[in-house]
Length: 290
Image 1 (cartoon, rainbow, N blue to C red):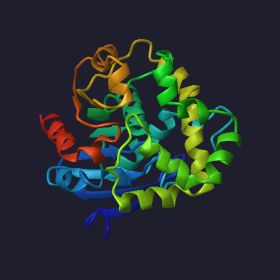
Image 2 (spheres, rainbow, N blue to C red):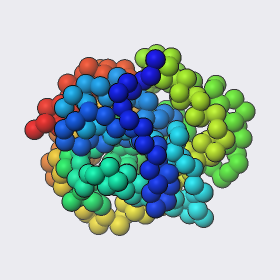
Image 3 (tube, rainbow, N blue to C red):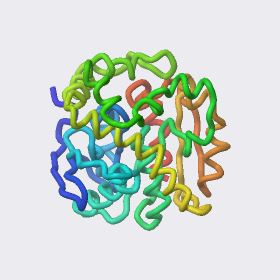
């Protein structure tokens, strides 16, 4: 059974990649961005109800899913959140949308944050799920333990690529089975899709490049903000059982990065749209329709 019945599939060439996208529904445009190590399939429990009110666009970020996997560049610049965000702007423009709302989870939330800061004229509203900005700047033993992959994936190639590639399925399952923030709520058909895509060595390398950029050029881009804040309304959601909610003052941090921010914890770990889709939808809809 297809995960997104009634949605159209698009392949859209941007200035730096070829992006796999789905589109469905009608109403104001809404872009959904997935996280690691997933694909657009992570939204399969929310896409249909959102499409009742919005024109929903789901994409695979460059390097993920069925989108292309360009070379990272000498400074990993082609996987900066700025470059990944530029893809999304061009996808939405190709579909006829100059201004739109965006909801991002995990890595997709980091892309959404960069879009909201750097392109305030294009983003009407933004929601970020289970992240705080600049996590490397707030370090602790618990963070390093739970988020070890933030340090593993940034090691020079081909070290992490080789170890992950030795058993891509084992590694992929470990991201969902971890003690803090893990979940058993991933649907078998969604996991099969994640595994299909993650078994590609090019995807393993590209997703490592995403994290290498996060530990280098993304920090440089954030430093260039010079105090620029998210200007559009910003919704922050996080899992009360996840690492982000346990070790950070989530709202306190985001209030230093946005002018109009609201948020709440949901009864979940890290994968909110798959663990608690009803609660996630209930939090998103009033914000997106305000």
